[in-house]
Image 1: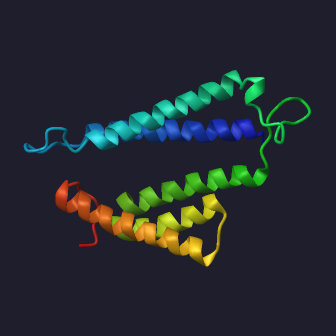
Image 2: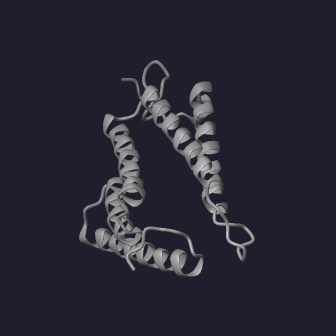
Image 3: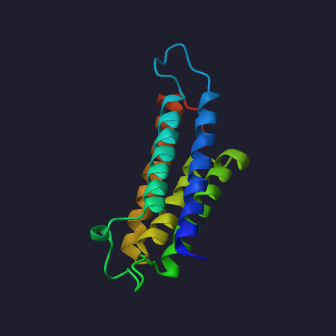
Length: 165
């Protein structure tokens, strides 16, 4: 399969997920004391995902200018190529993100625990690191974002996240 087809398919999935996020954000009710409402952040993020994906898809369809091409990854026909491992990592990260969202909202795994697993695992996938120092930092970031985010959003902003406590 051509890299551009895989990239276009991944972008189509992101556009669909962003569209689903926009629809889901529209279903969120607000609180009387919250001027922005609970839907503001997911709605904005979903719109951003759709717009960014559309921009990437537009660049893919129209092609990049010659000066933007990387000479190390440009093939003889002038088409930019990507190593298969890079494409597999993109697809793996997309799949891993979908599993993370399903674990949160379909299974009801607490945000703190799901994030504690997701952040170090995705850091290893993206950074290609397995050093003890790198994984310790990733685990610390996962704990801070997971437990801190759960406390912040459930106790301060009253967002209905699957919570540990």
